[in-house]
Amino acid sequence: MDQKTVLLTKRIIDAAGPKEKRYDIWDSEIAGFGLRVGIGGAKTFVLRYRAEGGGRNAPKRHVTIGRFGPLTVELARRQARQLLAQATVGEDPAKARNDKRAEMRITDLIDLYEKEGCYIQRGKRQGVAMKPLTKQYTLARLRHHVVPLLGTNRVSAVNAGDIERFFRDVEAGKTARDDKVGPRRRIVVKGGEGAARKVFRDLSAVFSFARRREIIDRNPCDTASVRKTDNHKDRYLTLDEVKRFGEALRELESDGINRKALDIMRLWMLTGCRREEIASLKWGEVDFDHGSLRFGDTKTGKNVRPIGAAAIAVLRTIDRHEDSDFVFPSEDRNGYFRGYKTPWKKAVDKAGLPDVTPHTLRHTMGSTAISSGEAMAFTGAILGHANPRSTAIYAHVQHNPARRAADRVAERIAAALAGMSDAEVDAPPADEDEDLLRRVAETLMKGGAEAERLRVVINALAA
Image 1 (cartoon, one colour):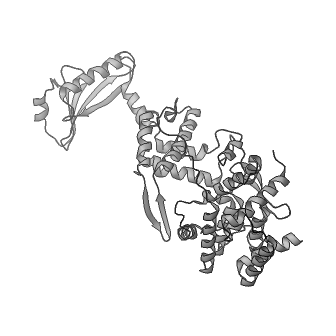
Image 2 (cartoon, one colour):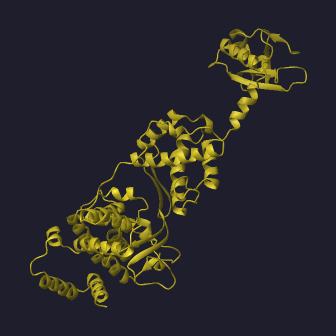
């Protein structure tokens, strides 16, 4: 080196003060090793060397070793020797560090996944684009949970231990928040076991996408020691609970709660359909003649669901709007009605069922069908299961028998919704016809929505 050199010691370094410009003090023992003193007084160990094994024409490199204070001169000198040894055998530690710093971060990977990776990765529908709502929920989970905890990490540096800590943090609610982001709009992020498992599956899919793109050569989620499957939820409503739920809906209707929300809940109960399948239902998907819902695109693809007369009766009482294809249109007619969350909370609170979710009503249809003796294949047709194993948790078919099964199951649930007890459903009185006529007459005399629905059913059966 052409600059003046001195043996760097703690005394020399302590005596080096700031000047008007940044300057370097080079070590006399190791060529290229030195101390950089900034104008603010910061002191940093540095190393200069020639890459590609050295030589006059080799490219020059500069490496920052570390800050004096946390790093002693002895440790800095030892690191300088190691870096020079790497450079001597043809390695380029400065380039390796720069490449590492420029490597993709988890946040960047999620952005790339949004643009190019949101496709179903396995099963019969492999390669099919995610549904818009599925994509929206998936990316929301990734951005609300993964980005805050792992977003700045380099993709290749994340290991199974990082994944396990991430899982525990989400499970413990570390990413939970409730932020108001505008008028009548909030972002509510929940933690807990369920959230941790869902976002773990999302993150595993992101790493699998990165592996297929050869961004990484392994998926750290594969070896992470976490519980990767959901708890088996066997919660469903007994017929007595269905009766309480029906009473709550009738009371809310009397209180003037939005009729759309209440009819959505009734159809959840009477059809066993998924939440969004009913909320976003279109008139073109309702087949009154064959008693079915014909979905062009569901979670399991194209699907035909047999539904009972009770569900048909509810649908016949709903007015159509010429300016919307939806059964439950939004107020501005630009989409479908989504305002069922608050009425739902009121309904389950009034019925004394705080642990019940809309999906519980789907479980109820399945469990009622199985416990009523319906064949598992018929139950699968009612629920729209593509895989028989999905139906098995509730314990190619012809449509007519499945529709009759739907009628039988919906009849039991509808009776409970109307206020009949388990005993009344399971064991009708001896004078069944007379008692039935009395009930029909009483309901028709009372008038209201229940009478209107009953009238539709009677007219349909008499036609």
